Length: 253
Image (cartoon, rainbow, N blue to C red; front, side):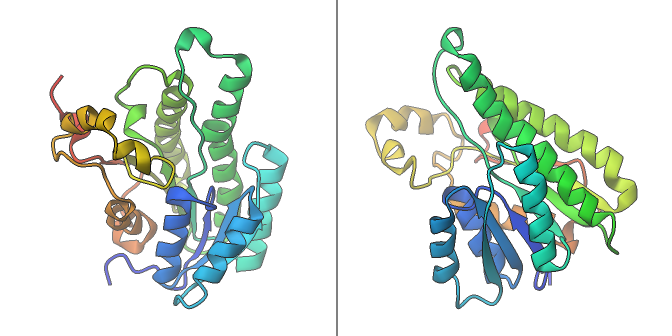
């Protein structure tokens, strides 16, 4: 079956809410065994309970991707619980809006540490497991179209996502010989619980008009591309960045 991931051993970061929780639920629904990580263990445990009847399973694990030692320990623990690791979904990320002239060192460090540094060391820790097993593995970095096309007041976030896209390509080049594929999804605007009220507002209407399809994405719009990159259906794809944005990247200036 195209996109078949039944039995795959998967680690998802930032899985306590939003896209991370959606991805964990999707993959478990397809029969994968998923270690879902985030700082908020109570939310992960609630997610696991909600998904108890799915074909796969969700295993909650507290993990702070802002700490390299915590990342290394957490990925190792996930690998131990699963008996290996086939897929890493590097989803954890944070953002903060404000003018570039007002960005503080603490704001810069917080976003770059999670969105770029944390993703690199999670990928490194996962790859160390994948190189010891037959078949390698797949790493999917959740980037953003803001890593390729910018807007004002999000400088650290956009810079971190641009770095994540370049990281995807360089790791794909280095790790291909280990049968590890490294790809990225670059979502456009996607409705989650955090932004649902904003996208229902009059202010958001102007933004939506700039999207060729004239709509905001749903988390489900990412399902097909994610399954492609996680499964053997994408076995000859590496170093690829797939935008899922309703054509936003190709819209007119």
